[in-house]
Length: 471
Ligand code: GDG
Image: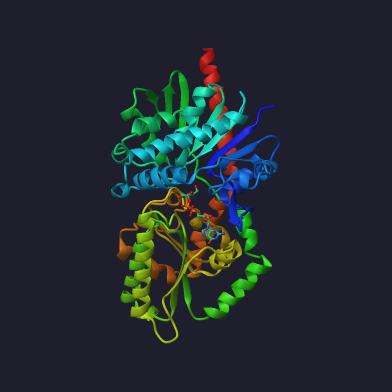
């Protein structure tokens, strides 16, 4: 019987170590929820790295324990984590794909490890894959994997989805290993991107750099038709709607109401990342307080920054800069009873996020570049009363769908400050007029819909290839 194999850098569980014992913590992110309906069934399986360096002999049963959850680990050494993950993935691909090419370090050793770890993932797949299986590979850490699997299993169906942007050709061409990367990606039958621009940039890079024939969104690779298309990812809309009336969320909402009785809340939630525009957002908030001093003591920026990659030097630097700017703004504007920014550098349970999404008058999402941005969709899904205003960067994939948000250029600090003023003064009817259609979009194009659409399209592409061969 054929099966589906999901592959991503990280498994949907994280192994943590406590006093020499390994513990499994499920991390039910959006992707895990969406793909849960697939990988938990029958012989289906999810392959990925469990988050830390694991010494299997320290606790032999761990592989079996994961196996019972349909999960198969790819263990990485610390050296591989440093060079493949933090190095090539996060110091080469991440900055270039997010248009911050000056941050990239094109280190040959990073590339060698990237190749080596992609081969390790290939070996894991080959242990379990059989002809007729469907393999769905996720994201930029595994760009070479589709090609590597194709060489060993020429007939399997391979899908690839990229969660981050694909940059324009002029940026992509900077990468020394650009042709190898594209060849790796073209091992897939179907390549999915969040936006039309991303898939267009990918196709453009392919036709500029490789000797292949392409027409519209189909590339011919050794007579095999490869399709690149747009699949904007959705969220688990139901989960966020339901959380809005969850007793724990309501309790936390009540205490937020007490603590911020006469204060508007502007909410910002991101992983620590220079692509998220956190510094520009702080500058805009400072300008807002300067331009509209009547909001002193009347508004608070509630800013959650979730620790991420803080061993990479650029991220460490960013954290220090954010700390300094927040301190400066709070020192400049604070009064005896109020300070403008409530800043947290940690993560919170989803119930707390939900209470905040429900409470905040404004969701402020201003990345410099973002594949999609799920936080903006979670804010919308939580607004079950159709109130609240979303300010959204035009550089986030989500801006192509959430067109009733106040759309801003994140480099235009003045425009963000004015959008904040507009949001805080928007009549409730207008809030509802904008919020309702956005809630419909988020509800209809949810994560389950996204998974179904991608899998169905992959099947269609395989059928199309077969009928081309028969001709
Ligand atoms: C990549 C792409 C693309 C955040 N803080 C907490 C927490 N979160 C959750 C949010 C949301 C997720 O993390 C963040 O998702 P984003 O989409 O906003 O950003 P990335 O992590 O950069 O994701 C992005 C995405 O992949 C999917 O394709 O949209 O463009 O960069 O779900 O809720 N969750 C909990 N506590 C927190 O403190 N529990």
